[in-house]
Image 1: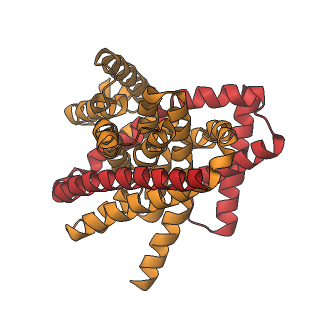
Image 2: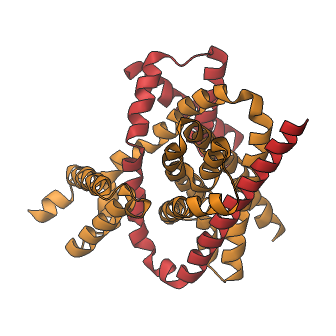
Image 3: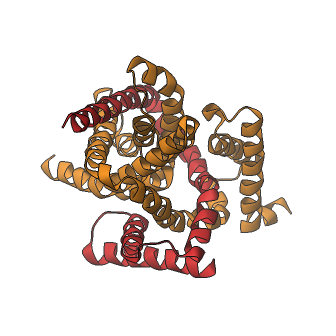
Length: 115
Length: 235
């Protein structure tokens, strides 16, 4: 479990280093995730300790989001100013994304099936 | 004495964990409705508590930062379920890639476009852009591109709740019965909340949803900052 945590933080550190060296505006942890994925594909299996550490972290992922979410309290003025634009943008964009993705996937699947 | 404890990280870690556990219990009692998502309930209660006790966010986050720190390792850990699912759907990778790219772009561009037409502030727009991406990645992306991570976190949660609430009706209207497509659509448009919801359509739907969430999150994290940079250069 501890070895798994070390692998995870190692990938994150590598990701942060790559982001810094290449000066790309991508979150270091996301690059770390891609590095981890490549490592797993090369390895062909998930080491047991790594699986345990990952399950432990992901189980409490929602809790880790709470501190950032509380930061909303600093932006009440911005929200009060833009609430209508935000609400309509979220609603319309979610319906659009949902419907378009569903229809596109169905189309792609039926063309594949017809070959 | 209150001042003394308010300055200790221990208090805010304890408050965050306790409120989160209570919110999880409440959510379970209410049939796991996305409207009372534990994170939404927790952050509302903690904001209320801080306002009532006149503690500012800076004091709170000094303690809660210990919990927030784990978000980075948790993002890396997303690679493990992503790898598990990737293995299962290798033969469908091309259509999934197309769906992911189109879905991610439509989600970001339509939200920003509508917000812009309605006159929203630039910071609001930059916080809206990653709204379909799983929260930890959205928070990091929003901070990177000049939005507010915390605002993005709130918008992501609302998007997730909306996606789950409208899913049954939209699937019926659009006549989508395939569990793989249902799952993938939920993962693209409603991230982790959509994935939790997708498991109600079966394990296959859940797997596709988790895969979509990981793919869209990764793609958006790489492409959105570049898009913003390009727009900033031309505009």
